[in-house]
Image (tube, rainbow, N blue to C red; front, side):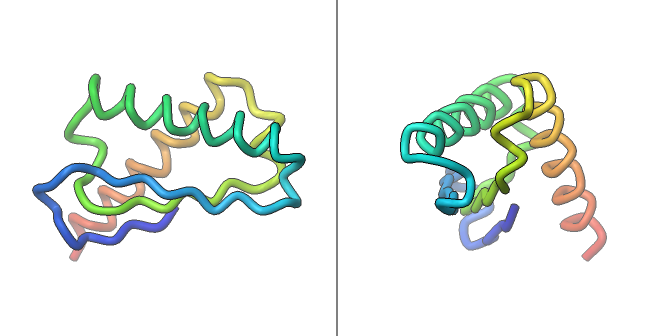
Length: 89
């Protein structure tokens, strides 16, 4: 996950970098939809966790085998790490 803090008070913009190594177009699009749904849900339920600006998510091939709960926990863990790095500035 990469974060660009260009508009911290604005909405969160999501971008995805999912390579062909992850799978076919159907698999990549399914993964993209799942990640987007997780981020939208987290923004609704835990708005302080999801920062404003641009987020680039780049899942690897192993992400396809993650259950929805595991994937959600992975995103939460990454956002927690991002938040702690931003506060440590």
